[in-house]
Image (cartoon, rainbow, N blue to C red; front, side, top):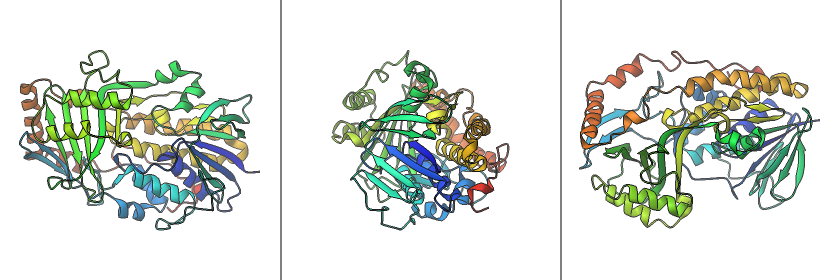
Length: 445
């Protein structure tokens, strides 16, 4: 009898985990995998993300590196620009294939593209295959072999009466029993809330870093190039653009460093998308350097809500990743925050360790596999969540004098190639952790 697995969330780590289980089961008889996603279809939009550290060998073992390279965004590096738009400090990427990644990774990719790579792989499809699996029985179902996707569905309730099964009630009125439920539903995970027994316990796992950000896209202009451009300004504010993907619009990021208690702009209380857009537009309305006016006007005139996303930056530190047969994976259990650059890599590491332990322990050893996963992933979590003291506050300045000091330090770091020296002295795995080997996953060495 196959192990019935429910994965909640079709982001990066859900499909990656399903891919790993499928690879471990060539006969397609050991697992019966269902992935549900609240969106009506696979999400094709999202931020630019990257692979670093342990994420690189994991993808290589999965045989997907060439596919990711073909879809990679050719970003040149990071450039800091002044109020006139002139770059005064640049930090190129390390594309040598050796050593640690720089500010821009060698493996930059749009989130929607990476999700699509794992989605196709989980269904046993090639990267260039236009087929989407077997003919769906309903418009929101896609399946192939032992993997099934259901879109437009959420979980209303999870209940466990013993350590052998999980009863799940879905938003469409169905109920089903699974041997394992995996919460891969992100930083604001509803699975975590249900697993820990309520909103209060779940919210206590989120540790704010006093940073609020907004993301949206605008049409490309001749001024958009292959560099990530950063412009810092007084009032602890900054704007970043990324436009290396010539087939896509320009990405705009607005960032404000403030705590919930200080919050002069009302960022923490804005709830609806309309309120969030208005709040961020007003927060930058008094700044007129570089292209800030252009970005504020574009935000005010943006009508498609799905093109805008705002969030409070923080880390998810959930000490309990497993309760019975419910387990948290990726950002749902241990989001390191975007400022670490390790979110995607940590999610893939979690998926790799969880799949490896399940394959190693077999159907009758699920409890032991989950315990081994919780122990095995913890060192990677602790390493990825370690922040340089003072971050992110040190990257933002309150006054014009503070901006001058900050930009001068950045200029010196670029001029003296201090960052290059640090990267040369720190090879990719120096001081880091090696991923365990799982022959049971049937991956390439």
